[in-house]
Each structure stands twice: as C-alpha cells, then as structure tokens.
Image (cartoon, rainbow, N blue to C red; front, side, top):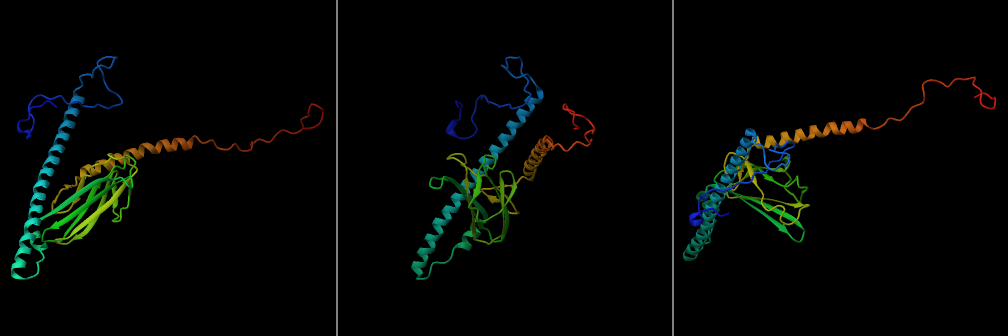
Length: 270
C-alpha cells in the first residue's frame, strides 16, 4: 500500500487514505450531481466510531493469533521432546513407556481450541472441524459458539453433535464436562456455498476458564443480533397482514328480495 514499515513489523508509518462506504436511504450530497458528500458532523462522527471499532477488532484478532502461535509452538515442543525423553529412558531402564498425558496437562495448564475450515471438492461442501483440548488439572464445562454463513443461504449438515441456534449466523454446543487431558471434536459441513465463500470460522465460548484460540462471548453483541431479528420480524408482519386484507371476500346473495308483479316485454309476469 506504499506505507513505510521498517523490518516488515509493527504498525506502518506515514499518511494513509481510508475508503469508507456510506450506505443510507437519505445520503446528503453537496450538489445534485452527487459528486461529494455534504459536511455532516453526525455522519463523520459515526464513520470515525466505525473505524475505531474495526481497529479494536483487528487488534484483538492479531493478539489472539499471536498468543495462539506461541501456545502452539510450546505445545508442539513439549509433544516432541517429552515423548522422546520418555522412550529413551524406558529403553535404558527396560521399562514400558509411561503415559505422559497428566505431565503434559500440568505443563500446559490451558484449554486450547483449534478450528479448521476447508473446502471439500468431492462433496462440494465446506467442512468445519473444532477441536478442544483440556490441558488443565480440572474438569471443564463450556458452551462453544461458532459463526456460520446463515444469511448467505448456507445450510448446516452432518452436525452429529447437535447443538442449537443462538442467533442468526451463530450456533452453540454445550459441553457438560471435559476431563483433564481429554479432547473433543465438533464437526459439521456447510452446503449451498461455492469454493472460497467461507474460509474462516470465528469461535467463542462461555465458561470460567479462558480458551486459547477462542474469544469470550460478548452477550451484548449477541443481544444486538437478536434485537435486529425481532425488528426485521416486526417489519414483515404488517406486510403479511396487508396482503391478507387485500383478499376479496366472496359476494353473497342480495339481502333485498326482487320485486314481484312486474311484467315482461311480452306481457308475462317476471
């Protein structure tokens, strides 16, 4: 982007132009030609807040990614070194290789999640796999929440674990107990998508212990999604009522009886 970034690390320096897309039913312009937006303080302030919110979200994502990379490096190092030491020691002493699950649990002392989102060219579906490792000394209980492109018309299939819908585009699974040293896998597929439509799944959790690789669920964010759902549902209800009222009722028989005693053109009675 032409920004100065010494060592390709840290925040780039220098001026930058940021393009903001303003979508509204009543956009104010400086002229009828619509060449530029009018100088509206409220619009500028809302755009500034939106950019700050995006910046905070990006920072959280980078911090989570950095923390996950360090933990994964530590985990892989322990998984490589400890089994090698245990095997060599067992060979020297002539004893069986001990179970290292409890030792690894004490060293790691963390709950780790790994999410994989890949395109399956055979089934033409997007396969999602969520793995949760409990490397702590206590039994853990969580509610795991994952995002999925429900608004894009996707359908969740092969979801053997079940779960429930928390809000539009958010699915939840309740894990009653995850034993120390145990792992569990949540897997499902997304149909109705093309390759590249869905490449990353955001993971959230509810529980006392932090989960590396997932974010603690923001209940305010979830409530905002539900509020928008209710508002959209209320907007659709009047349209349905209006369509129902436009249905014409069948015309019944006239309540006034036809007069008698009239003669026809040929002199007979009607």
